[in-house]
Image 1 (cartoon, rainbow, N blue to C red):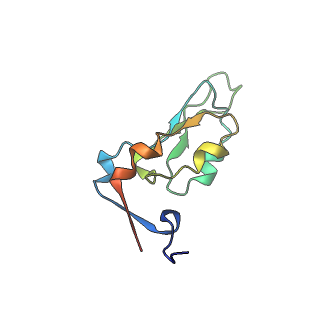
Image 2 (image 1 turned 60 degrees about the horizontal axis):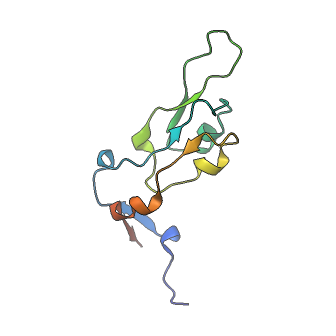
Length: 102
């Protein structure tokens, strides 16, 4: 072992302003069941419930209300979604925006 920490254990520093990095989830509203698992998990507050169902039958679908609160290269929300409604960009396309520091 080399003794250096893996990138996952190091802090990330952005190499561009956050507003210029299009890293955030997209929700497929056809698949979203409004369970709010994503909102419960996401500490930065990216997700919020959308408008209420006018008929009052279904829970509100989740929305990406604060996309630039999303932590670049974080992927924790995608696997927690039981309906598979959340997708994220390919991490490989965004590594150039991040520098790992001790």
